[in-house]
Length: 309
Ligand code: ACO
Image 1 (cartoon, rainbow, N blue to C red):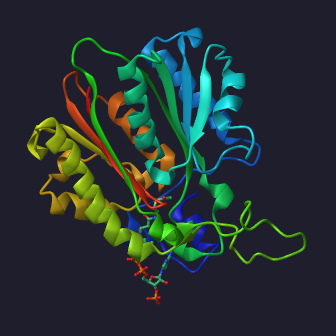
Image 2: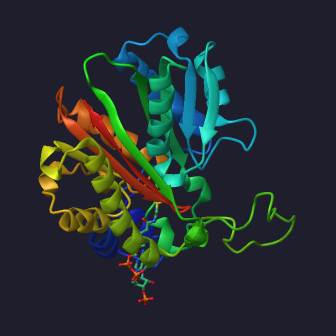
């Protein structure tokens, strides 16, 4: 869906969207494509790249706020679709930070030896919870999936440190009011968009810049590194102005910051793994490179992960 397509739906313009967000297009999954269908494709590519057999996957973790169903989890549906018969499976709900939370959980399980190979997926069909009459939000979001296989290494590569933080007092800055147990849908009632994403964009913007910067500093400090030791930053792709402001604050060169927001918009939990995969497949990651991923989202939740490639 291009900015020109959105001009036909709401009072907006390509010029406004491009200059205020950096987004030119976003991908919208067809009605008959479920989030786990996208996750299947991403998982198969990740397992192929990792040289990992299906029976070797011991744990499936899916980060998503748009699961196929409320019950069962996306991870269980994906397990069935892929035939990952030896795995345990569960989902995590941490909005745009979900993939980072998944890295942190995976690090703990791999380090304590409970699981040897973990399939971690970030997937969203945000088009299913986006109000296409609200110009404040509908220009931002897109659909997608990304996946990684995580296993122990014996050469010092892998996840070096992770950081997660939340602030539930600002839960209403990005939320959906109607449609779940606390406030169910009512038959015959027009919920007036309260059953779709509601957002205080300017509030989120300011805190995102500050806390993503702090989260980067935290994983760098924990590892005894500075920004100049990092080959590539892979930030959550929410708004190019948020990413640029964060880079300015930390005095990072934008040459070391991976961007693909122009083509995808904000894909929430899928954003970081899609960006990581594109960075990897385009040759921007070399063995030994230090890579920092960072994200921020509804909850509020934010976090970072330092990985040696
Ligand atoms: N087209 C044209 N005008 C628009 C549009 C649009 N699509 N959207 C908003 N405007 C208008 C507003 O109505 C406002 O007009 P007004 O002054 O007459 O009221 C004006 O543009 C400026 O609005 P601001 O909110 O000040 O614009 P801002 O520069 O803050 O940009 C944006 C808005 C893009 C939403 C920005 O605040 C942002 O990106 N915030 C972060 C959002 C975010 O990252 N959310 C997701 C978190 S991730 C997750 O968990 C899914």
